[in-house]
Amino acid sequence: MNDPKSILPSDYPGFLAEIKSRISSERVRAALSANSAMILLYWDVGRSILSRQGEQGWGSKVIEQLSRDLKAAFPGMTGFAVRNLRNMRMFARSWPERAIVIRFVSQLPLGTNISLMNKLRDPDLRLWYAERALEDGWTRNMLVFQIESQLHLRHGLSQHNFTATMPPVASDLAAEVFKDPYLFDFLGTDAPRREAELEQKLIDHIQHFLLELGQGFAFFGRQVELKVGEREFRIDLLFYHLKLRCFVVVELKTGRFEPEYVGKLNMYLNAVDELKAHSDDNPSIGLLLVKEKDQLVVEYALGGTRKPMGVAQWERQITKSLPEEWKSSLPTVEELEAELGK
Image 1 (cartoon, one colour):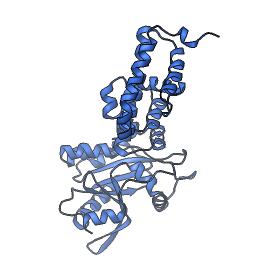
Image 2 (cartoon, helix red, strand yellow):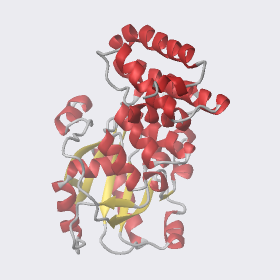
Image 3 (cartoon, rainbow, N blue to C red):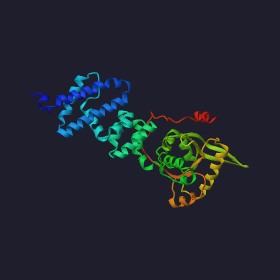
Image 4 (cartoon, rainbow, N blue to C red):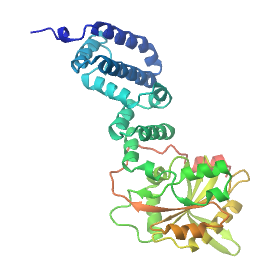
């Protein structure tokens, strides 16, 4: 039987020596910074394979032999199976710029990177999700959930008046925070018919709802009482946004948008700023979630209002359940109250 090494390129031994030297030099650093160093190592190996295959026309047999040689040279290390080496090659092809790998990709677990490669072919979209995963601390399953729910098509979208009612920096941030539509996959097969029913289901799944709202939201309360003059009013849901440093009033509607909703929400925002907010808080923001809306009617209703508010649709989506291991990284109500000095 022929020696498998006899069919390899003549400069394969030198290539193998380079890879083994690279792996050896990274072992100490990999022990200190296991994920980042190992991800960069995988990228370097994949880039080396791509380079040799592209420039010198090496075939797939080289990867099989490289797998055997690396396993023999580093018996205490795992990850040099043929499949893994092909993943490294695909990894380097997916992220051609090493600077991007260092800044974003190397900070993510290998499993998350594999999901990014398998789920997304567009490089710009892949980078967008990598940045979100790093910023929000998504697990691999959470990343897949966000990709499958097409977060990129909803992120930063809603009809609002932020530009006219907030300073430029704050309005840009607020616009990025809100989506349209919001997808609720936990409502069951029957859409809620009453606001109270929708509110109850959102509270029952508050962690999932916080995830859909996005990073930075902390739940403050439901049916929050506001006493204005001789009357009492109740806000459906009240949140505090840690980056915007303001309260967010959420009003729920199971039907279509009506212009009079804006007037009531405007009154709630005035009352929250007066009765709930601290002196160093920014003005409160309103979010009106409706089942249907006419964009022109919303535009006219928001025109001229002085309080920042956005209007977005909510949709019932039947998808797989969110990962059981996911736990909100947002503060609890108790932690929020402590921070605000309640």
